[in-house]
Image (cartoon, rainbow, N blue to C red):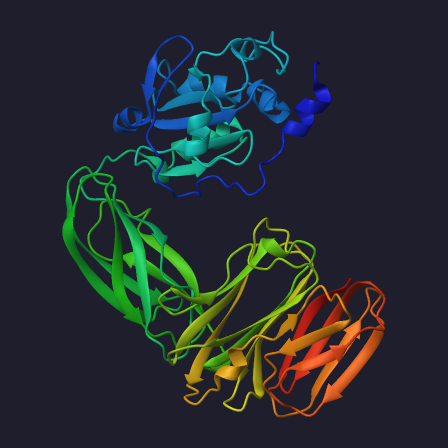
Length: 479
């Protein structure tokens, strides 16, 4: 096999990419297959067919193994146009750099003849559709139901694929009145005694226009939280996000939103979620402290309010220094429920340290809300907290950053500005081996502090600054 090593290396995910999530509405597209026939996705769906889309590449080993397993030939023969006529299959070669020779097994970047024995349509140069569906790897295999909702069904058996597109969740509209609850969209964290908005995505899965229905939210043990009567007009397969109103949860619990009015099919009438009540209490003054690993640009943090709006945070790439501590002071505006979230861009977590703490008006730490000290794999960690006190006389000094100049240090002297506390101030300097090589302290003052570091050898050091209740770490370079 030509270019075998290259082919194996290429059959990997594209890091940072992620395909459209399950439950998304499939984007429409029109393609022409290698026989010259045109295919439009929505035309097939509107005709009541499910459509399986196989995004593959001729050089992809796993794609070839699945392609030659005979799964799709079996499905197409039994359930395609000459069978029960329930499904259509589209094979889309999605790497535009490959050639027609590769597709037919005679090129340099292929595992064989992809057209041999295949009756369902084959489309070449489908990179634009691959991108439209935000695919992250080969093969990516979706099943799109007549209602336009997609599911990644993957390299399943013929029976598993068939079971899905023949299920009630994927069936075409067949009864006049069918209300389908697709997904819960509201928050899954709240605070005690806090009204929490509930919402759900609804689709008309019936053949007649949908003009009204009733939704009821209740806990796992049957305690009704609220009921909502919706009126409007949805044609077949049209969707709408329905806001039910606000509910107060007595404790952390699973809850259900269900259709409680007349409906012709009950199999899609319910969605569930767990509402988590936080026990963490805070004032409006919080400090976020983050120590980076060797990939500082891959992390960010955010604080969101109870409506899901971000009220504070940083973006990926804002932290640029490895193994460095960063500090942020945030004064939240309202007594409310908030969520603190930490993100990792590529999902490997990394060896980072992070905490968020709450402080009183004197700058004394009264509660560490959340601590992360983790080298495991994760893409998102979060914790809720309730602000129950506003610090109305917070000194702006808490938000003043400490600065060092010059850095790199040229003549051996560095100026420190931004120190605000009237308590003891300490500067400790550590070498790369973690040994403390210099310590100074002084009584608290807000004036400039000049350190004499002429005795340090050229190199990279870490300076730990204690400014009363504030602790900040900075990397310094002695040139």
